[in-house]
Image (tube, rainbow, N blue to C red; front, side):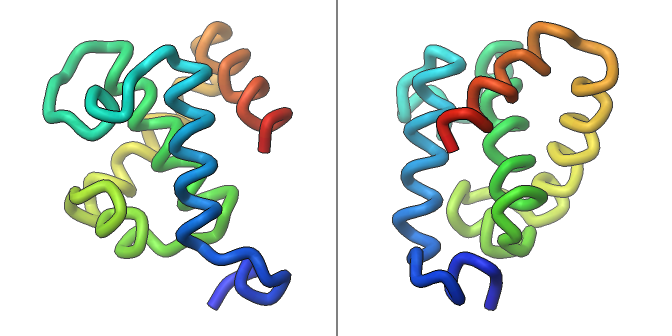
Length: 103
């Protein structure tokens, strides 16, 4: 149980909203974001999605992994990678700030 379930916002709706917003900000389709392709643009979108769902929305890595159809360790890797990109990549940081405004 997390913060959003106490407030009354179901996790499913929250995840879908975040997913749609990441697609919009990173200019990806939902198919591209769920694909196995490893283009930088797609990986950055996945990294942002995993980071927001796990660190900001309070979902467990297992819940995020089930939603993204990935391994939970991959989610943790994406979160660690996002933290590194936030410190070094200004463009990535500006996109995350856009997402925080939308969220």
